[in-house]
Amino acid sequence: MTARSDLLTVLAGIGVVLLVASAIGWALRRKLSPDGRNEAVENLNDRIRAWWVMVIALGLAFLGGKAGVLLLFAICSLAALREFMTLTNATRSDHWTLVGAFFVVLPVQYALIWHQQYGIFAIFIPVYVFLLLPIVSALRGETRNFLVRVAEMQWALMICVYCASHVPALLNLPIPGYEGRNVLLIAFLVIVVQISDVLQYVWGKLAGRRKIAPALSPSKTIEGFIGGALSATLIAAGLWWMTPFSPWHAALMGAVITLMGFLGGLVMSAIKRDRGVKDWGHAIAGHGGFIDRLDSVVFSAPIFFHLTRYFWATG
Amino acid sequence: MIRDTIATLVGRAIALFARLVTAVQAIWRGADPLDRRQRIYFANHASHGDFILIWTVLADPLRRRTRPVAGADYWGGGIRRFVGRDVFNAVLIDRTRAQDGSDPVGQMAEALREGASLILFPEGTRNLTDADLLAFRSGLYHLARACPQVDLVPVWIENLNRVLPKGAFIPVPLMCKVIFGAPLRLDVAEEKDAFLGRARDALLALRPVREAA
Image: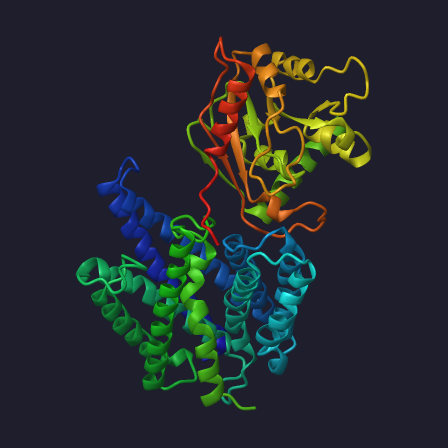
């Protein structure tokens, strides 16, 4: 099969899943919330609607090729960075640092992917920006909270730009026998992460008893995590045909992605708790902000990228 | 006619730009967003974009007859004059009192009599200090005395001073909130200082709680 027909198969599959979800949401609404007052049902329908928008955006980006994918993730990075920076202690003396982060660092990182400069892409933010960013802030002479401010801005860039940019960077991996199909790797990563989030939620609702980290995230349970992770791993194995992996390797990758996504969700929850907010933003109805939806992808993307690069790619 | 159309388009473009940069979210806490009654919105003032943000989140029918009160010294010339006068239909007042006979409260009361709502910054000038809110000037009291039947709605603008701080010309994208509080009015027997203190407290009460670093 060609890459394009595989991609269309995947998109059609997701479309069917969403159609079923929409039908269930519609039926639940008719039965339980005819006047739109049942919050759980309304939230579910909000989420399904947002899923449609996300899938359509992702589908268009995939069909738009490398430029489309890079543009989509650059926009996601920008939206996520805005949410993260809003919660930091950056003050007006960091204004130029913020201007640099948004309008220089972010575009440069994505331009490096566009030009396939792996060597500099992998160290640009953790080495060069890490050193240059505090210099810009220091030159303004404001020392109050300096370490906190610089560390927060640096971390915002690592999470929202550096880690997120590893998703489109998958397009650059030269994998023998998989030429022209790399976009399916992105589809695999995103599908497994998101389906794992959904399944953990569903398993948690159905069988959740013991809380895994009550201080961080009261809705996460051991039963939900195990059920969700196992079923997402199975689905990952079933999707092996769209990857360069064998079914066993696909399952292993799925497990790693799921685990990192789960732990990433915990870390980002800890930050939200620390800052006293429930959601990162309010951009996506039913989901909160961009980071609320991206957190698990962001944590698993670099690991998935490097495992694939090390074991499957050449050069 | 053409000038009006351009002004409307520029207004829409400015509102869209404000939304793109700040993802501004309106929170109505005690005031009804669709209530068409005439109002005086009074807000904290830290950035030239303050009234734009309030204007952006108002529903369309309200937006059209809501006029910001702004300093003629800043909005008086060139492109700013077009934006201030034609796009936002600002009530331009002489803050410097350079001319004899200028009567800012009279101008505002006149606009209210014509049916407009007003956006007003009772600190009188942009707050460039570290304090959350400066002392209020007396204009809000005199206006409330002149038009006691109009609701005064406190509006807290959160974060815009970080988007475009003093002296900066490139805005950074950070998320902003505009929080509308419960309306208040001047009591018949209320003294000036008591009223200004009460209004200021009502505005400060809308501040989101910030964690200590």
